[in-house]
Image (cartoon, rainbow, N blue to C red; front, side):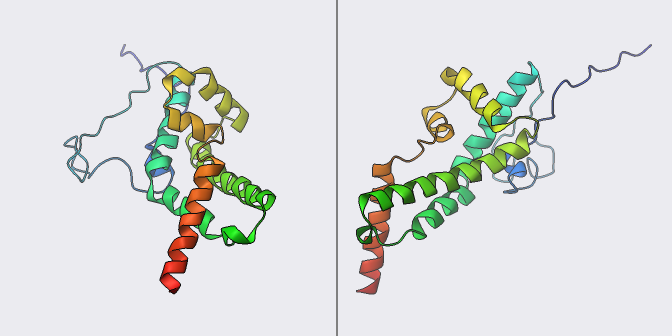
Length: 169
């Protein structure tokens, strides 16, 4: 009698960029192990525990989000929606920063929710915090709402205002 392959105990991990709708599934279709740009593509064998697969899916999606053009567009749009920096007091500027972080969080949460729909936001945060040593500082900061400090955000905002003033001149 032929042996049956073991049943999956967790979700099948999809290509993170495909989950985010940023590109089709892995590669150029010719099964040569290379993608369209000639870079090697690795397959996921879904080994380890369900928690390991969930962790890998979450981190993979977050990393892909961070380098995606859609993420940069979200950053740019969030800064572009702010009024001129000099027209606000400190409290109002801080509120703009909080709104900015909320937009970034929503963008990341959307991609992660598609990758691991069976996990809540709290479970994802716990999973990442428990394995902090395995996560890059950038990913950990993004998960903890510190992807861009107020000072960094204010610098981008002022840079935007300066570029707008130079364009108008």
